[in-house]
Image (tube, rainbow over all chains, first blue to last red; front, side):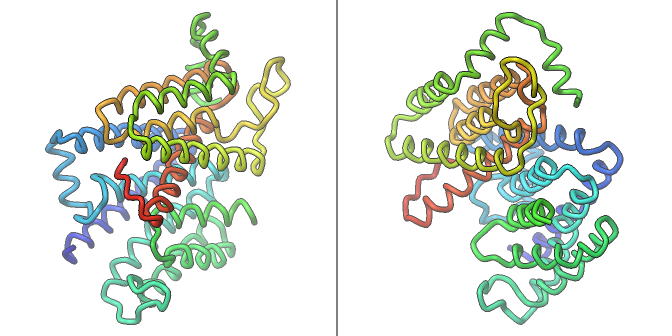
Length: 185
Length: 160
């Protein structure tokens, strides 16, 4: 996948994260649950049309701009992103915890990916990730301090480990790790 | 109470209520789900995978219910289920079934079925909308988990 396309994809995820955060803070958790739920429902319907050979120009443009060519299904990455946000919204009830987690998912993951692809030090347990990317992920996750204070430090650590885990969708492992962190602490 | 739950609760139709109560019966609902698997899929390996997904989703959902222990919106009312509210296991199973048919022409029907089941859970007052949305999340996570295991076991059944 070209650097430009992957950067565009990450910036799109960043924009989605910021939009989700603003909607959450302005309209509240209940509204956001409905938005993300129906987004997933409509999204799966569009995926079904694409899988059956139907072509929707807007969806195809979206895929070409923001999806990885190697994605298993059309809309795969975006679906996991939306699912990750839904996990946070439904499993957590405190708005600050949800906001902190969305910040980690939207901001830290996007920035670490952009920087990490230029990194040289490969992680020993995951050759697709770099130490530079994980460092940026950890540091940018600390922005969650704004919502949850010092809890942002262990949150950033847990999320960094989850993000670096090999073979799994980080758009899902990060929110699950964040949700578990807030449910346990 | 959220607006979607309030809207679903406001629908006062005796037929819908009766269907909702029938679906509330775990044995009837389990039989209905299995029948829909058998009707919609004729390959045994795919049937096995869908049923495995349903089992994982139900076990995962039940474990989450017991751990988080969110009280039902109908708690204290006669006829209210004794277990906890979040996530809705009925919705989880329906959404897991739905997503298993993502690459099929029948998908919209399974989607409508899942939405109808979700509606009946709200209409009978045993869940709020967050429980339904949580059911969707549990279904998709469970489906992904089974997909990972199935693929690592070398059974490449490209369902969805």
